[in-house]
Length: 199
Image 1 (tube, rainbow, N blue to C red):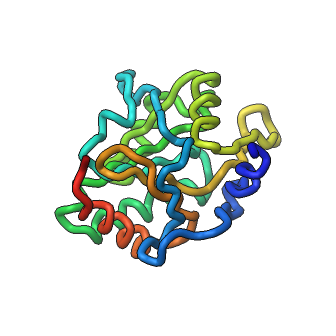
Image 2: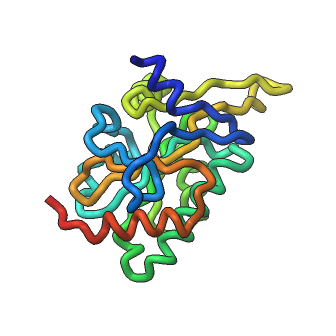
């Protein structure tokens, strides 16, 4: 079962795509994973050292993405698309919370993480922890990642699942959005979730 899940959430380096097989109702552009038995908990610290969990964002639609700040394209593109989607939503964009979880706590210090997510505008928070805490969080979300050695010990890259998890305002995981779907598609899904009454 775990192997099948890993195959569905295809691993991707920052120069490759990851996708999920199948699809949800036509009303959603992303993959509907409502009722999934994973991606239920996320407890790490923000760049100021404050403990954070998904419950902190209840009342907002939350988009969670695992990546790293030195990622050359997938990570910044994903966050930029989320920022663009929030703008497309107008005033409702303030009800969308972006959460970036670093997979590279060795290099992504709190200061680096704070500056990185801040460059995409308001409405983003960066989360970090120890290597073991990050590994546990990634496992909870079925996120694959692996270090790819570089020319030096500190110039490595990471292959990782390239997609985001979207939670509704009640804190339930609802969608997996594929990398590269575009801001318009994401905004359409976020708009639908924002229209739902929070439990």
